[in-house]
Image 1 (cartoon, rainbow, N blue to C red):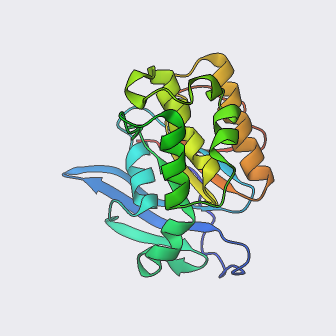
Image 2 (image 1 turned 120 degrees about the vertical axis):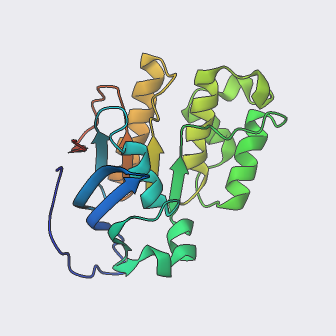
Length: 216
């Protein structure tokens, strides 16, 4: 199933990497996947594919620490993530199915708050420009379309310093131009030494991306 690179050596602290070793996930009585192993290093973009219900979202939630695996080990910088949660979460950004946009705040204010919580990225105004939302910067979130909300949620990635991006269906509700924009952001993040793991039902052309397929 997917990639299995076996045991990995402890990485240099200056070169963070995510290691997944012999991971097994069960939801209720249903086994989603088992013995999954892969590594995500600086500059990697990993697309997780599989049919609906195969466990793609569950995998991302495991990587975030939101779920506990039935078996297996998750390592960040060579250490179990459950032992270094503050460090791991400070270097992680997760965008799930829910956009988590504050409806009473403007697009700009949503990004200002995101930057204040975990800053270190680009200015909110620049982030809005990158995702083509500058013209509606003062529009409250509740008035944004589904595609605009999705782009705003992804713009939060740009205002923080996270090295690892975990994205669940990031291209949902986006048109072709916006899909290419987000794909470019993923490529730029990887080129700068970042890492990304994302799920998608779309056929996306991202330079140097690898695929991990979850099969039954």
